[in-house]
Image (cartoon, rainbow, N blue to C red):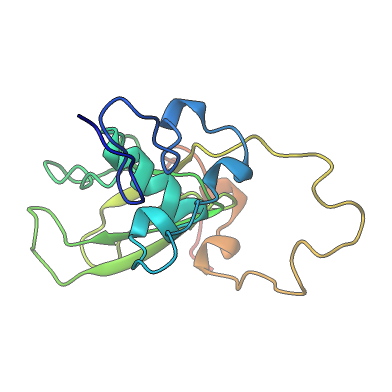
Length: 178
């Protein structure tokens, strides 16, 4: 004999109003929680919202939405074959510990959509950010000019490389050294 459920988890066979199946999430409204029953302590599932709720719902159904697997450490990335770091945002940090792994302390490398390739200053390993987020919205700016808030990326040595040095190997210099 089943009794009426007064709160908490649903009885077997009853729908669970706390959990929308991961495949059915379409809008931000689907990521709003029902809240806890009065007089009870809310669980993470009762009160989480947004990306945290999406992560919890995904994990409950075996989906790792943030792809938290470690990066490939079986080799050192090169310019021709870099270690790929996937990102759904405009920037991504990757920690390099060298090759073989743990050869040096962690160097944190910041990759952006504008500068997706970074080289570790300690070991020379190369990393490349692969953007996997939503496609660019041509109407996202709405003409307000707020996209950078006056911030300009600082220049690095890469900004001062002569154009003739970019690309493949160059012939040896045959003239006088200036």
